Image (cartoon, rainbow, N blue to C red; front, side, top):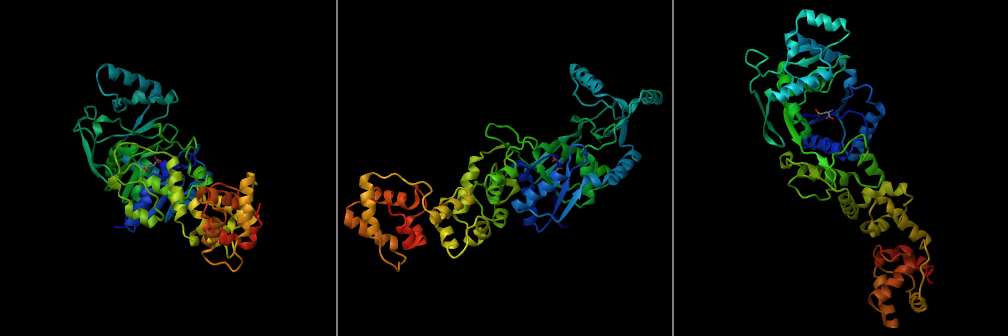
Length: 457
Ligand code: GLU
């Protein structure tokens, strides 16, 4: 059996780092098992789903390094869901209900006062044909509920009915179907809720493993019953914990907070996002993992903890720095070109500055410093200016060797008696205009003798 997974967001907004966690869990699982990854858009809610969001989600996934084997849109598959509805109706497993939300609410309250669980009491099953005719003449249209298999003879007498599965992330899981209301699969207006189309697609598309957030654990109990009602073997399920902000709030597509788009625009590397999204809330340490292959090796769904994982966006910056510090020139090359950094000096420049970058785009300002000189002229005391003039006059002639920085500063030390910070800081300020930055030993050869002398105060 080919491992086949799917990532199934509804395209109602941009995906955030929590959605990326689900996508990555599926992607890495497929990678590890040489499986297929299906991108499925759960866009049965035609009013809220937008093609522009589907396109943007694909863009975000590709940026992260996730590439789908197939793309499916639920909005193009209504006929298949209609056929499943017919099948369930024929089997007596889908029944019409006419209650309004207010009536249901009242019933729940009554059940609570009687000490009964606040689930749907299946009153619609006992409607007479006259009552149904009255509802219909009042203009009421039915919504449709799936009859959960939680009773022996009489549906009005549900009994504890456990559904078990061995969860990829959570281990043994149990849901009692008697604790749940029969789920509504089709609304009054004929539109589908998520539950049925998802199962129909998972069957049709040969999904072998459903990996999703743990907000779906209860749904899984229901959906396993639906798989069976439709004559299919349920897939393997895995439910990972959700990510929350440091203050414990959930993430939402609607707010755009921590969207993949906003992280990309703020200069965070895709593998920094992927490393955090996958490793946080697991027993693994969160470290910057430079490639998807290496991340696949670190990935183990069973290592996820059961409680929500708080994560700190500041951690992304730390991971970003680490990735940049080790990024080979070959990987940075094209993006540096876009920043106008090219030519013979591009590689030594990259190796000199990468250790000082928060974001790759910051390389552009170091390139400017090297090309144009300090962007702000530093102020020097008379003493420092005298020292610098003396130092620059000691600058060795061409040709320079690899030890030029060491040679020059040794001469300056000897001639001026300055050492340590008193020696290096004025030189750094004169050469770059900044009090910190890349090793001057690396920058000096890039400036060359002429470029260096041009910075003599
Ligand atoms: N559209 C559902 C969601 O985003 C998909 C859940 C699933 O993977 O089955 O929550």
